[in-house]
Image (cartoon, rainbow, N blue to C red; front, side, top):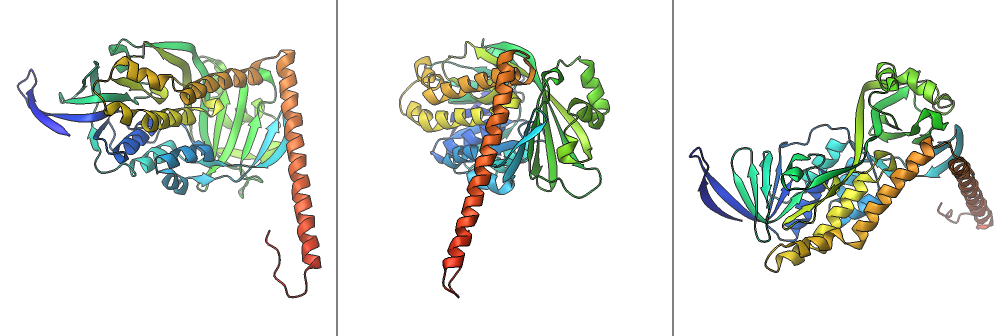
Length: 416
């Protein structure tokens, strides 16, 4: 890091700090990027308004595929220790229990996820608590202006600023809405009304009928709590929304009348959080010196569960595949930046996220014959997997019993 003195128009003097990489936003994507680049030996500054990431209703579940991505940054074990593994899950489709299967998903509050990752950021990273008001980019040097008046310079700026649109607009980048309010997610804790615990470790319960406009509700543990994420396709001004906020338990039972057959009587515990998602991408993003990652580049529908994965793939490909190479040669022109956006793994990730968004909405809301066939096919597939798992477990149990019966007296029992 280098520095030099500058004066703003008010006469205040600031120390202008220079870095190889400046990251705007210290959420999930920005914090992982800072960790990876600093461990690669680069001088990094990261700017965020919050010293400690606040409680925010966003991603609350990850899986072991995402832990594998985090392992490439050396932070997978820390996140794994902070999360709760569900281990097994029940699956219901069209109101029928169709499967009980092993599960590799992990529940963790988003704020805890980000703060856990932040503890892994090397001390060499300069963390600046502040708000970025402007970014000026070019083929050589980028300038990042803070609300305080301070200016940072860097060879590369990574925009990990989430849904914030103002900075992108100031660079001439335009948000392209595929569908405003594409879906709405509710988050709340659920508990048995009569005490005790639910009969499952986790449950994914898909909508019973397209008219309900429900994708699914998923119940999963976070610590000792049973967390619920409920995904619907509604408009914000739909009267159903007001009714759900006013009486969530009654509306859950009315929207999914067979749910209680699996859960037993339940009650909503604590506040109900709501997050509508605008499904969008960005145009004119191929510019010198600036890269967009995660939601800054484009959103994913939360019902698909691809948002965190998409952001992690962005970060992994950018930091492992490109930044270090870019910094070994002069300039930071569009031809360098384009390599990241054209990366095969990133392109596949973005396309898959969009395709799954369309598929999930069709499965939840479309009344055509094709979609009914797909729903019943998913029921049949789930039942087939369940039967296969039962047969496998029965065979393994019988085999172990046989070996135990054949073993000489006093010999050690075979391991399960």
